[in-house]
Image (cartoon, rainbow, N blue to C red; front, side):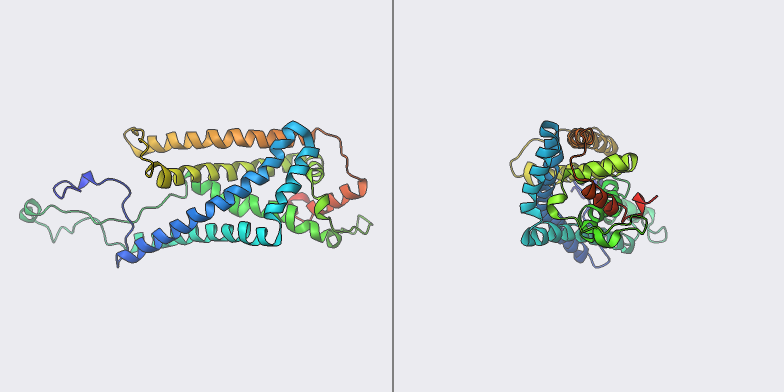
Length: 304
C-alpha cells in the first residue's frame, strides 16, 4: 500500500478488534475449519444425489439400488458419525462462530473517521489520515448466506426428520384413526417407494420441500466451491484472473449467475429424476405404503 494514497489497498480488509490480532487469528482458524469440512459434505452430496439422478435412466429401481449402495458410505456407524455428522457440525459451528467473531470485531473497532477537534489544516497537510481497518464479512443477504440458513433451519431438519429419524418410530406414530399396529420401517424399505408415496400422497408439499432442499443445498455448495477454488487452487497454479467490471456489485452478480447456472442444471437432473419416480405405479405393499404415510405424518407439515 502506498502511504501517500491509501486507496491503493488491494484485497479484503483484514478483520481487527480492539486488541488487533486475536480476531484475525480466530477468523483464519474458523475459515480453515469451515473449508476443510466442506469436501466431506460435498462427497456425501454427490453420493446422495446420484440416486435421484440415476432415476432418469432406470427409474425407481435403479435409484433405490444406487441409494442403498451409497449408504455404505454415510450410514455405517463410522461413516455417519465421522464422515457426515462431524464434518457437518464443524462446518456449521465454525461458520456461525466466525460471523459472531467478525461482528464483535466490527462493533468494537474504533471509528474510522477523524475527530474534528484533533485535526486542523496543518496536521492534515503534513500527515494524511489513514482510516483504521474494520472487519468485513459476508452479508446475510448474500447468495451463500441465504441458501445456507434456508437449508440449515428449514429444509434439512424436515428432510432428516421425515427420512431418517421418524421411520424408526413408525410404530409409535400410529394415529388412533388408523386402527392398525404398524411396525417401524426397516432400512431396506426406505427406498424410492418411500419418496414415491410422499409425492403421490402430498404432491404440492413434497415438491415444495424437495425443490427447496435441493435448490438451497446446491446453490450453497456451488457458491462455496467457487470460493474454495479461488482461495486455494487458482492462486497456487497461477491461473489468470478475469478482470472484474468496475464496482463489486457487478462482479458478484457475474459470480452469482455462474453459481445459479451450475446449481440449476444439477437441480434439474435431480428433480426430473424425482418426476420420473412419481410417474411410476406404486410397487410397495399396501401395508408398507401405510407405514410410509404414517411416518411422514409424524411432522406437522404433513398433518395439515
